[in-house]
Image (cartoon, rainbow, N blue to C red; front, side, top):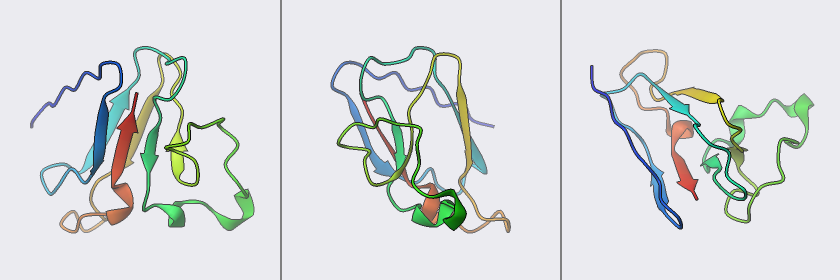
Length: 101
């Protein structure tokens, strides 16, 4: 089991990436709520939205996250997503994610 800890500073960006075959799922824990930006966006995950749900309403989102499935954090929240498909061998391309501060 591996633990990876990242700390974003002002104007940091963690570009779009997949976490690879070493991780079944990821959990992001938000320790602070940013005044603006700070979203985790999934640029290839348009299939995640159920058609009956319509447009996401959790924003407002920054320009970087608009048009994607994205999560705007609140202090104390956690976001979990699966990095692999149910066979535990195939990367789930929809889990490609990126973050902005």
